[in-house]
Length: 440
Image 1: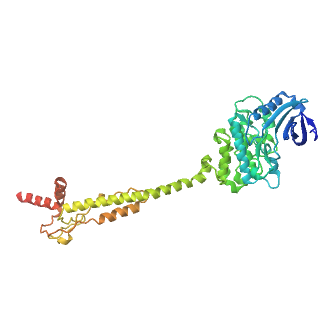
Image 2: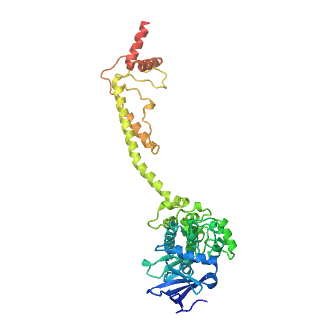
């Protein structure tokens, strides 16, 4: 039976009872010497004589007393009085999250993320000190009732905590004390666990903060355990379509295999912040699926930026290449003056014997003379630029008319071979061929 107000216990004066459970009661008590009220946890007499419970109770005091974190309830002292073990702890004047959930207003999304972020920091700190909590749930998260600007969020009750490298003992008892609504699969099966088991419980708590119910519910604890072990985590968007962006985040933190979860609890908390569009969230923490939803905009933005930089450069290079090509063609045309018209490939009759001087043009450029398109992103613009430049390269009219006859089509091939072999102009090759024929 709980102690009455004003009762003296181990020097403390009982103010009121905060709560009662299977192991004992928690009181608000006046410190025997300091002007301060502490939370006093007192183990029931029958539990104090149980060696297993006794070891765990003392472990909570010894391990938690070594922690100093703004989001962890501090332990001040421990002892035994009239056959009952006790621990004095920091008193948080407020309520716990489970009571907030039962209230009319519930918990807002912003409050939920603030709670999860604070507890995540506390858990990562404990994990760095090789301490696992093993019983993360709404009832063990305390919130002060002071002004929201100075509101404190505290993780309490390391009653089933033990060192991270302690893989033996107390597993069955843990399942009695711990709440199966939030327990990780590896913890339920008695496997060796690490900080990612606490992360799983934190994610299950987050699910309840957003929806009002834990991920798996049933009146039979065995059914809940079975779902933790084999059933996929429910989708948050089924209850909260407006929070569909958080589905991949919670799915990752609630993964059956610890290796598939986030490396740290703080990573999970930042992913929640990012999913809700809160400032300061780090996008790299996202689960792959979640990252796809948001990060797909980043590559597009980068690609557009690169294209905007590359396209002018490519067009400039093409323009320079076209100008150089035009200059080369112009020089070649000057070297070949006076040039005779080259019959078209489809022409079957020879052109007039004495062509008009004003119509003499440089031979058309071969198709390979067009500058190659170097930018696959904008092929049409690049081709137009090159073609327009090439078409402007025409040889100037000859200074004097020529009376030399035009070679017949059958003479075109020897002329081209002569030009390729000797480097002479078309007219020089044609005259050389005619002289050779006369000699024969």
